[in-house]
Length: 177
Ligand SMILES: [Zn+2]
Image (tube, rainbow, N blue to C red):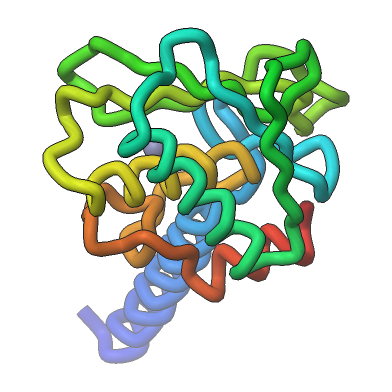
């Protein structure tokens, strides 16, 4: 094989590698692309939540209160907790008894193409071994409710020591919502 042919193959390979890198960076940064289990934009900057009829107990409620306080502290979103759930309440919290999950989020009513009017978030109390678990899980599901999908470096991972949003995720919430 001639040297110039080897060089041109190298250029093709380098180009292919760049393409793979570019597409993996693009697909590694999804925001508000769904599916309905994660990552829909909130309908507006006021994020309202309430307790579903089975969401009992101070420990689990404190975990969710922590997560909404944290959302308000770390982003431009503001929060409000209301005593009686309405059909337009942004996040209604319920428990789950599915032992294969710590928590879940699903948008039930949409407001336009990519915005969520009303969602249900769940936490499985049986899988919460500590208040750190509750705070991380509440931060995680609350993150889904403002458009975030899974990431390794904040509470959108499954690590209970991560109870905050990364500056990258805060940027999406503040600038792209
Ligand atoms: Zn998740």
